[in-house]
Image (tube, helix red, strand yellow):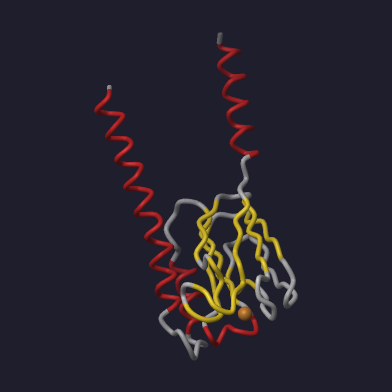
Length: 166
Ligand SMILES: [Cu+2]
């Protein structure tokens, strides 16, 4: 019996680790947040997930400006599709090199921890170089934090439901 439980546990673990998700982010001249945007600009991911940047419009690139400790920074070629695997938990900040002054930036939040002060600082430092859409980074940071709140609320209500049922 013990062996059976252990086998079940191992298969569960391996199933969950094979479910790495791929998130798609489009690079656009015009999107919901205005001109020169990554869409979605805020991605919530798990460790091991991949983020695929799609050059829907030409002339864009994606390069990291802040990555969590131990993670690799990246820089794509302009106009090319680019995929990055996020292996470390934390928040990744990135920009489109040609359009960073227009606030063409994005965030990837990996794991359930809130955005770290270090990442926030780096994001705000980058935002100082914006000459247009100056409030965009604040909006994105707020959105990254909001994702947590929503998930916690969902978690809490499902815990409550379970408690009520038992
Ligand atoms: Cu761009």
